[in-house]
Image (cartoon, rainbow, N blue to C red; front, side, top):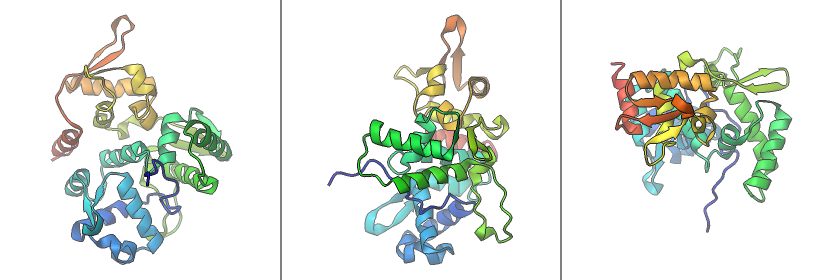
Length: 288
């Protein structure tokens, strides 16, 4: 049987909520079989559908590895987050999780398509759904998909990235996504638009983390590519050229990269031999 390379509505209609990943990390660390007992609902203190959603978001975020009957284990990244920032209080952790979700085309197909390929900067929910249908059917050539599930994914994306304040007093009932603080999307009435985040909330190391997958064999990349190519900092972080240059200049001062902007080259060259895993370690260790 050919494995599907896409997935819609794996989140059970729930946005990734504040506190969920901390619970998931904690209980997975305690018991690899946590999700086999009533989907993990009892251990996580949520309903079965919410427990399924927590597992889904942890899988999309690359925080867990599933090993069949042996259970679910924290991935290398999951172990680092659990060690350094178990409560996901650092913006760096949230950005890592956001980037991993969006890059996970097989598990979070609509997220990947929205950030990488939906070109409209301003749109209504209906316009987003229509564009997503068109891309899935005519460009991605995915057949027999559920339009209702795709529409639900689009609605979840909008709820996940627009900053909202919930009024409920019970924290467990708050339908608040931790990503709202970055305001990658803004809303007024029925209109939504893509928005560059506050750069003070975006560690330059996140740009480097994404840049590592964009460079050529010669360890270089054009700045335009960092703005437009799939899974680039420009696409995944909604960065404009000025915002990208701002973060690249910080990396240049750290001597991780070198920029050449003479004669219209606009090239970035890697100077430091450092892996994505080492980026995570070095970021957290510098805070200690």
